[in-house]
Length: 208
Image (spheres, one colour):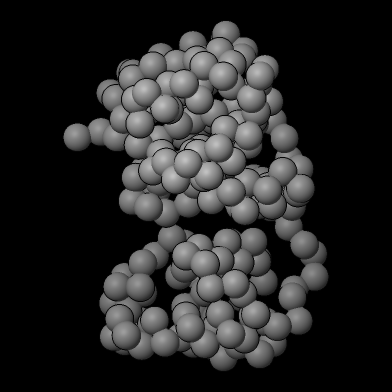
């Protein structure tokens, strides 16, 4: 059974293109909206599993909708589609527990991968965005990691679960979790669900 989805964009052509594409791929699109106020009403009324929202919309932006959903503890997972390659917006999106961030110029190429990851409870942020925002210098803390910990991070950056990492590295699930805990401490990361995943993806090019 496909996840239930609502979509919102104030550009009629983009909205129609995305809607038609998702329906063609047999996704369960419940409804669509042309502004933020309508989008929030749809989330409130339908409680979809996923909401694909433009960031810049009249009345409420995608980020403001995400903020309200977080405050109301809605289970809907938010995917933002945008032309914005802005570090401040990206950081705000992460702080609001947004599950996906896809650049509009790659939306049709990436949206399926994004929805697939999000339905598996894995956040998806456009590779193009991450490489655009990439910090050239490797973080100092990376030097404190062991080769095994680096390998664990490489697998995390490829969206592998602890169970899959264990199988790939021939170690137990518990050992993987212990490595993840040690890495978190060494990198001084907040103990949130996806802090390690975001760090691994943002620093993927430094995990050689």
